[in-house]
Image (cartoon, rainbow, N blue to C red):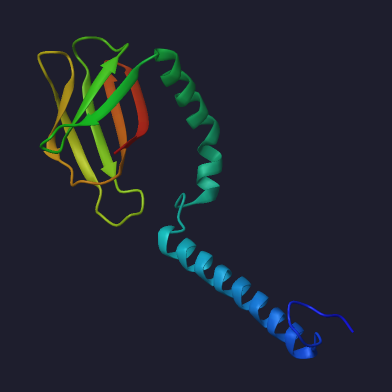
Length: 154
């Protein structure tokens, strides 16, 4: 007879309690993880995966051209909630900057942003964003050059 941390013998009730406890924890964790996964991911990455696969090489080519431009953006938020962008490597004049801010968990609607160039060369959005974490998609167009970037905005 095997003795555990009890004063009496290790019985079938002990092993039953251990197994029931173990599987209760496993089921609880699985349920929690599945609930969290379903509540935070909408499930749509692209509308039509076949069309996306046909466009993939074109998207890679566009990304390579954008990277070759060497433009970089640094986004931040003013105290009043407006978005500021410092664009480096791009022409000083003639750049049209637009963007979209979207909430990573989809709890708030997307916010389209238009930017105006300031005297110091930075860009300031026309609209404010509510507090919280946002993903910012920035698009800059200067003549035939088009550049895009996505970054977190805290």
